[in-house]
Amino acid sequence: MSFCAMSPLTLLGAFLFACLIAVYRWWHDPYHRMPEGAQRLPGPWNLPLIGRVHDLPTERTWLHFYKWAKEFGPIFKHELFGTTHVWIASEQIAKDLLAKQAAVFSDRPLINNLPINKTGGEYLPLLGENETWLRQRKFGHQIMTASARLSQHNYPVIETKRLLYKLLFHPDWYRNLLEEHTSRNICRLAWGSPDEASRLRQITMALLTVISPAGALPNVVSPLAYLPAFLSPWKRYEKRRYAEERDFFLSQQAKVRKQWLEGKAKPCYMKMFFDSQEKSQADDLEGAYEVGMMAIAGALTIASPLMSFILAVVLHPEWLAKLQDEIDIVCGDRLPEMGDMENLPVLRSVVKEVIRWRPPVPTGIPHASSKDHVYDGFFIPAGSTIHAMEWGITRDANIYPMPDSFLPQRWMSPSYPTFREPLTQYPRLEGHSQFGNGRRIYDNGREVDIPDLDYCNLLIAKPDWFQLDMTPRNEVKRQKMMEMWRRWKLLKNVSPAVCP
Image 1 (cartoon, one colour):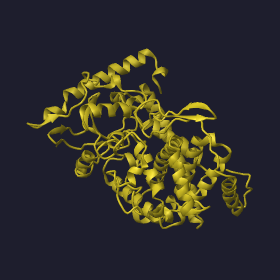
Image 2 (cartoon, helix red, strand yellow):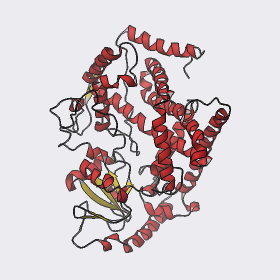
Image 3 (cartoon, one colour):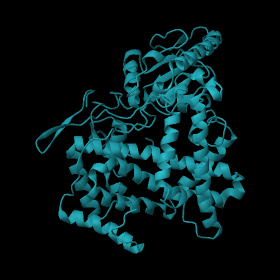
Image 4 (cartoon, one colour):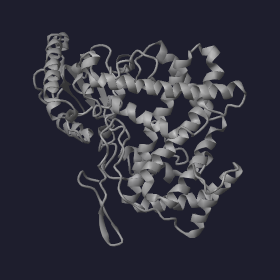
């Protein structure tokens, strides 16, 4: 629901209602509790009651907050309709608060357009700390560990062969194909089959829109969350969205249950849930959402770095050539495998740099403070929303010299602070250009703008589509890519011409 779809009278009424709630929050100002000697965090000036809602940008919000970080320092705050938002642009401060003071800062904020996120058992990545969170976190750790021992590593190999085959014929569809690729992969991992990948994409985007500040107005104008459903188009939409999501997860669960009872279920997260359900005592709905949230998290976060990788190698073709040379030497004519990783430092460095250069979640996944805290003399009130801003953290020039430049060598050369050895182990993929209009390349003599900062404004940021072409280096490579997929399809007794 956008501003344009609402009448002026509705907007005025919603604004007045928001102001009334903001007055209530002002009356309960947490800074009345600030200890003697402590001071408020620095930050931009705030309008009474509404804070900085008037100048939040609608596009690339992380650049706006990063600008404030350079002006006010690596930790600052602003207000938004009575809620304090604390922004962190320093890796050390993020560790000090989110790791060393995890008991205070491990909670999640309430998402106004998804009010069950903190207390319901459905949304593990957004869940507040409680018994359900502990149980589901244990299950998540279990399936991540177990999947490494099972045959699930074969799923990405299958889907990569399919992706390469389709890119040969439709390179300009790369954005859609990468999203399709990640959805098919995660569907196999979650439910043993890629058949519902397109439906997963729809469910995933609907949830992402609901939880993103740029998606639903109550996520920014928080008092609107108090409107009754008959006055709130957002609540009515959310009710429909949740019902569709719930039905999808339960139907996927039912398919795997039937296969599991028949002893035919393929290795997947849902099979692991059924195998351990008697011990865990989790009910079916919780299990459906445990697996469903793993699927959504994977579908959301993997496609973005893949698209940023395409952007990076288009802008820096010299690194594409280095990658090709390394893979040729180590792997020959086959695809890289997990066992090759220690011998592929260039590949690991490029992937690591892509994630640093264009972090998939540039504003960070928000945390919440569960009680008042004083850090370095600054008061952080209970109930504050804490943003570890990845865009700022990965642009600390003391750790990442020339932070806006794409420099994979920073992970391989001793002249950079990020270098670690041996290169058979580092950089690890775990745990983790100047601003402007972008670099330019030439296509058959025609100058083409590559908008290297044009990303969508949702919580998980993906680069906008731009036109490109992909051509195999030679005919041998082309035939090899086609043969890999054809061989797999023949093994499955499906015509090679069919590429579902």
